[in-house]
Image (cartoon, rainbow, N blue to C red; front, side, top):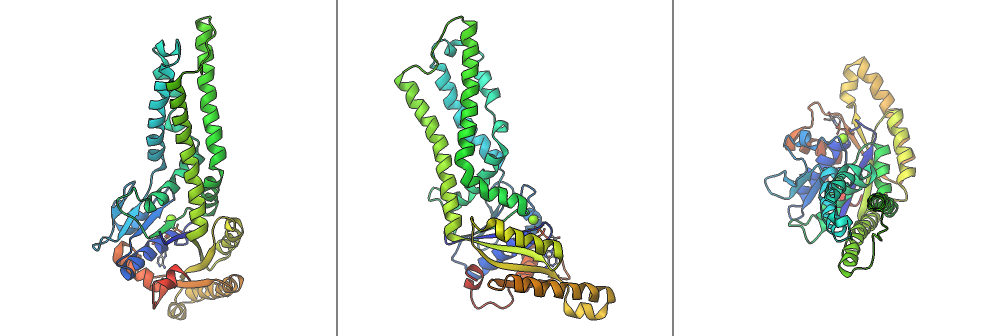
Length: 342
Ligand SMILES: Nc1ncnc2c1ncn2[C@@H]1O[C@H](COP(=O)(O)OP(=O)(O)O)[C@@H](O)[C@H]1O
Ligand SMILES: [Mg+2]
């Protein structure tokens, strides 16, 4: 993988549209590279933008076959993960003295340990697994460039924090699970009026225990790899409109994301075109205010690339609509590197 382009900013400023347009343009400019656009917003809307049902599966988005999209569902990932864990837990429990003969034990495990019991934070972290999968050799398609459409700033930050915090989350989660199993075993032993040592030495059981621990550790290591990858090849671009609230928001976002990812540019989107302002008083007022903020934004982010894009007359929908938006955002380019490494 060469580059992970991350688009952040307030809601409604055009993050999803610019993410999609960027991916479309890169796929046109770089026919030999595989591009993936991925939505990390629970309220996915890439399908609407491309007018194609995407959902939780890699979906081809152009005829050339080098542009793909996905709207991952972290619940599905969590379910797959817990399914394997549950199977292992069941075998482990059944190997235990007495406990293994209690018919309810399977039901107990099924109800205690469901995908619903996984903390939301951990589930969201599973969004990021898709980035790793996109560059994993185990996958059929290897992606060179990933464009990430982030949720608004607050939720974006929570996502960045998760892979770093995954160690804590996983440990807490495993401990909770271990405690509930232990509690259950103690209750069972009370019923049998007999003290049983639930984790008595038994080679097979120990091996299974190690396997379960390894699953948890693997997840943790993936979190560390993601954090590293975002540090190494991640490139954040903040999207704003030329108005106060979203300008303030990207200033805050710059500070809050600093330790996770490098910020390389700012998109100022939905600007009123100059000729429209000339023909209407109302538009002229908005235009003047926007120009004032545009100046302030440019000064505030003076060391960064600023991409200005006007509001298009036509809604940028479908692959051609997104191409039009990309043209408006990036103007005349001499090479894709201007997008990749501004
Ligand atoms: N430059 C533009 N010109 C015209 N419409 C735009 C432009 N950028 C975004 N839009 C429209 O603005 C709305 C919000 O854009 P969207 O990409 O969904 O924002 P976000 O992902 O930040 O919430 C959408 O209806 C989109 O089609
Ligand atoms: Mg969006």
